[in-house]
Amino acid sequence: MDDGTEMIARRTLIAGAAAMLALANAPWAIAKLPKSGVKGLIAGASDGALDKLAEPGAFYRDTAVRILLPGAGGKLASKLFGMGDQLGLTTNLTKSLNDAGGKAAGEAKPIFRTAIDDLRWTDAPGLVAKNDGATRYLQQSAGSVLFTKVSPLIGSALDDVGAWRQLDQLSQGSPLLASAGLTRDGLTRSVTEQALKGIFHYMAGEEAALRRNPAALLKDIF
Image 1 (cartoon, one colour):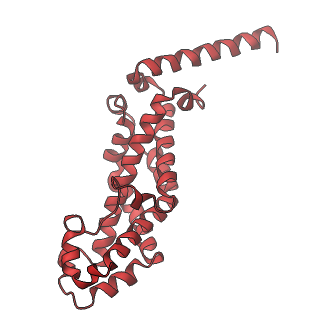
Image 2 (cartoon, helix red, strand yellow; image 1 turned 30 degrees about the horizontal axis):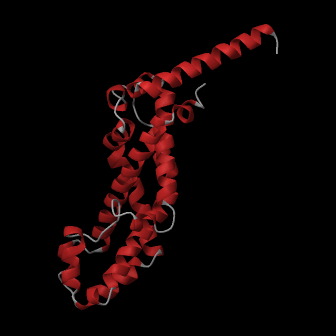
Image 3 (cartoon, one colour; image 1 turned 180 degrees about the vertical axis):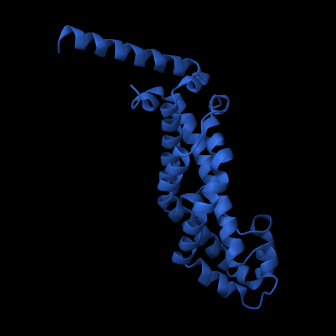
C-alpha cells in the first residue's frame, strides 16, 4: 500500500470511528446519517424481526405478540364455542393462527424490503431520532401497503396449517360465530393485523439494539 492509499484508508477509518463514537454517545445523531444509512437501519431491524418471528412457535411463546382469536382477545369466541372450548379445540386453533403468522413472517422479507425502498424520506429525520423512530416511520407510512401485501400470505398460511379445517369443525352448530369475526375473511384480517403489530413490536426492539451497536449499523456505510 503506497503512502497516498494508506493515508486515505486511515482517514476513512478515523471518520468511521468518529461517527460510531457520536452515535454511541448521542442516539439522535442517527438522524444525520445519509438516507442509505437510515434505510440500512430499518432494513436490518426488519430482517431481524422477521427471522425471529419465523422460528417455529415464536408468536405463540411470546405473550406480547401472541395472536388471539377475534372478540375481546378470544374470550367471546370461547363462550360461543362452548363445549368445543372445554375440549381444547380453541386452543388448538389459536396455536394454528400463530403458526400461520410465523409462516407468513418467513415469507415477508421481500415485501418489507420493497416497502422500505419505496419510502420517501423527506420527513424522516424527526422520527428516526427516536429509539424506535425508523420502525414508527415505516408503520405510519407503509402500514396499509404492508397489510395489503401480507394478507394473502396469512390467508395461504392459515390454509396450510389447517386453521380453516379447525374453524369449520368448531363452527358446526354455532351460527353466532360470524358476529365475533370468526369467518374466513374476518379471521384473515384479524390475524394479519395482529401479526403486523407483532412484527413492528419486534422491529422496534431490533432497531434499539442496532442503535446500541453503532458498528453493526455503520459497517456497510464506511
